[in-house]
Image 1 (tube, rainbow, N blue to C red):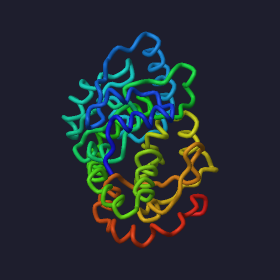
Image 2 (cartoon, rainbow, N blue to C red):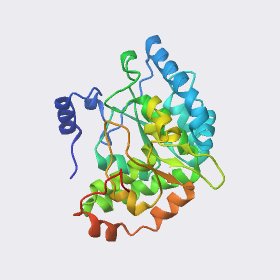
Image 3 (spheres, one colour):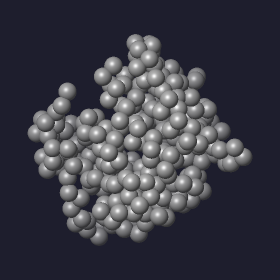
Image 4 (cartoon, helix red, strand yellow):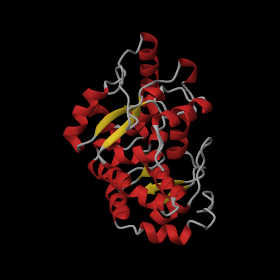
Length: 277
């Protein structure tokens, strides 16, 4: 069911979300309004410097190539400038949003190769943790990997097909696929070291190290059906991380997936425990 900007803004205000949702256009985008002060620029550089120490060692090469191509580290990125570079690589662009937006416009943006990025940044006292996804999570976490063609294709396909799953009652199932790939995905090709690419890991100092390096992390070979049936953690380290052999595998598995059949078979079944998959 569609929700109006005004109704959504009232609901976000009740929840204490900090974005200016009343400034949304009908598609829930806003202006970036590049008016960040020196303190905000300092927070951005601090976050990037600290996280780059880890990502340079633990992130997949395609993510690192994306960071270098897009130029994200020196100052808060200008969305239009980054979009110009991203379009040249994979046809994607960045649109500014005030924070979390409803599923329908989010999927529509993805289906049209537009990635929503929050236009505000966390405060200095929130360097280690923030409840809402902010610009650092969205930009530093998600955007670089969109320069990778196969993953960029998967994200567009996800936007196109997610509505099908939701219409059949598979909301949680399709969300799990996004969570375990775009947010907390790991990848290890033949003869290659284990690396991370998910945004939740890229923007987390402690969980990135745990997921890739800890002997206690539970890593599971990627299987799309298992992924879509496995529950996940919101406010603690994941109890399972799914490891892709390649981005092409992800794109092909989702493209060949019988979403309707999978949802009908498992939507009423209890989810799998991530600790035991």
